[in-house]
Length: 206
Image (cartoon, rainbow, N blue to C red):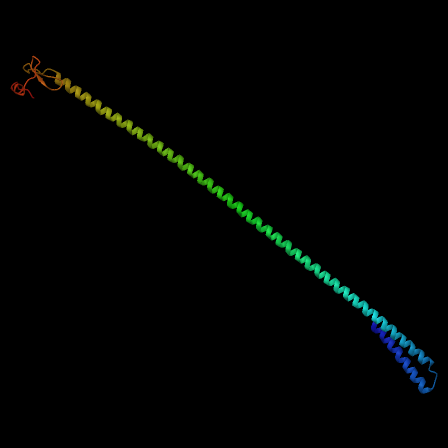
């Protein structure tokens, strides 16, 4: 639009100059040429003024646009910074949550490990107690069996001894009046101890 207006003003000014020169050579009145030149000059002035105003408006528009662009860039930068800050915040929260999760898992694993260790210790303790009880039971049974065996041996020995004593206490036939007591000693018929020579002479075993 400004270029078109400038061209019109320039054309009117040239026409005015041409008319002035034509009037000068043909010696005609110069009034029309002067008016045309004045109109051209006026149009040029108006065009220059409009162009200056348009340039000022363009400068203002560019300045405003630049300011708006800068403001938008600042806002974009602030928005990007906010986004980055929010992303960092969320990442930190996620990291802390993961750390807390791992700590909780480790705590639960440690608790389960301690519980298992306690369970195993208790089971080992009960097994040891059962083993000791069984060993004590077997030892008691063995002791009682040994006591019973020794008692049986003693009883049999006593019975054998008593049987032998009874056998020896019985009077021997044809012993010439001699007899043996419970201790195996030979006695005469009057109760006195008999000598070995007497027993041999009687044909008895000492």
